Amino acid sequence: QVRFVESGGGLVQPGGSLTLSCTGSSGSIVSIGSITHVGWYRQAPGQQRELLAGIKMDGTTNYRDSVKGRFTISRDNTKNTVYLQMDSLKPEDTAVYYCNLVPVARGWPFGQGTQVTVST
Image 1 (tube, rainbow, N blue to C red):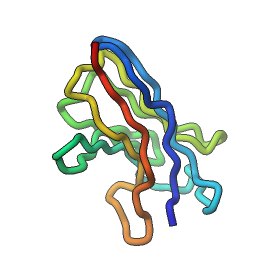
Image 2: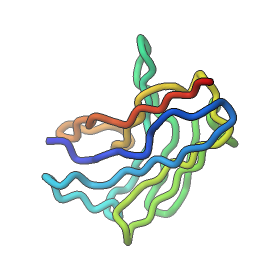
Image 3: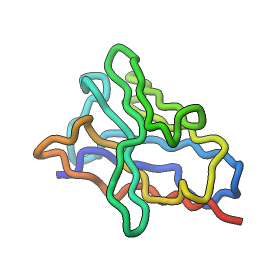
C-alpha cells in the first residue's frame, strides 16, 4: 500500500526553482511527525533510484553531494508534509522524485512520484 503522495513537479528552465511536497496518502494513516527519518529520492531514466536528502525527527538534515547547497529538505508535522525546495536547477536534475523512509522499509513501497523536467 502506497504510503506517500508527491506533488509539485513540472517543467522549469535551468537555474529555476521548484518546491516539492510529500504527504501521507489518503488510503493509509501516515503521520509524518512520527517518522524518525524521511527523505526525498529521485530516479532518472535508465538510472537507479538515489537518495537525495533526508531529515530526522530532531530536524537534522543530510544531503547528497550533487544537491548540497541547492536543495533544502524540511518537514511541517502540523501539515503532515515534507518539502523539498530545489533551487539552481540543472538539466541533470530531470527525474521522477519520490519521498519515503530512510532507509526504505518492507511494506513502504514507493508511490508514483512527481516528474521534474529541467529544460529550455
